[in-house]
Length: 408
Image (cartoon, rainbow, N blue to C red; front, top):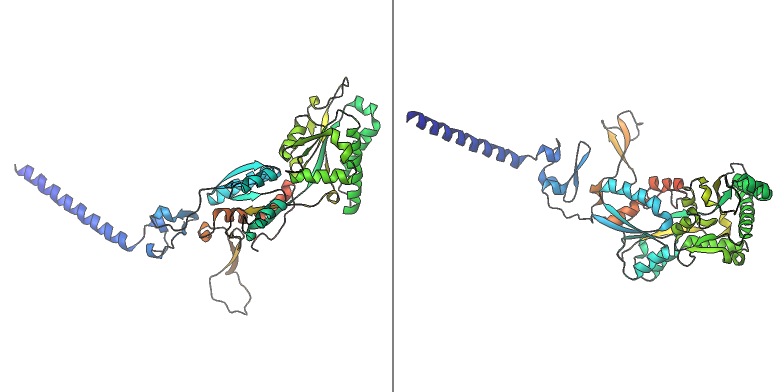
């Protein structure tokens, strides 16, 4: 019995100690933030800015994970409509944007005309990237979007691609054609010091001769995108008209809904040539399967793609614009994705004194905490127009419209 009484007394003392320890822990938590939340900084919960992010050892900890009230809300997903020619660059850009911000981007690809019509009928796209400026401008003119939401994001280029026949027998039969194709390859890949004007003259002559040669065979088909829907199709029509070949071209015409379908007609062998976006032509394989060329009984050794950049003197500039699909002004400036200088100094220096080693210029990268009040569509456009992304467009076959980026 004494043993049982001793055990009960021991349990009571242990329980009292647990209560005392818990009380002390609660008191400590009430005066200091958790180290897992705010690292070792002196930031307190009362000082934590609503909607901001605390940074701990380089990792971003969101405010909602700290049980803080969150007034800054953004959509988990934005819907972006893009003209077919820019679909591949956009996929890459969207993935980078999602990785950086956590904002998912759902992409719809079609011709500019089709997407424009859908927006007119109430399609809920957050951002519309057209292959021209006319359609985004029309949305502004019709008061469907705010006038400040229109941005030129890229300048496109037109190219003509066709299948060159490398069969030795074909070369012997049509030696002039062989010489012409070789000449076109050399001109298109020219790295000489010819002026832009001289190069344009050579490319124009080369393009005209190749089109005439292709159209000499009634069975040869040439594809363009629908000029009424696709700006690259309109540019192709302008080119043929300026070469005085439009009427001759009509019996050979195959028309795609957009520039991607036009390219598909070529890659599947349905047509011998196609006018496409230069950016798409860059991805074409040099060598094509032998079944691509049809020359009757002629034995085919190999076929290859020849890319001729269409001189910009033959068509109106393809300035590609976008709109943030809202009647409210988008927040495009300042561009939060541009590095901002931060001056760090370990000692106080006089204004007139030269900078020393302890006076270091650094840059502050993008921080989602700075985007409080900026919509997700606006952030996406800022990212697209940032200097780094704009410069990368050159690799995709485009020219940047603003090397400084929006908001700079």
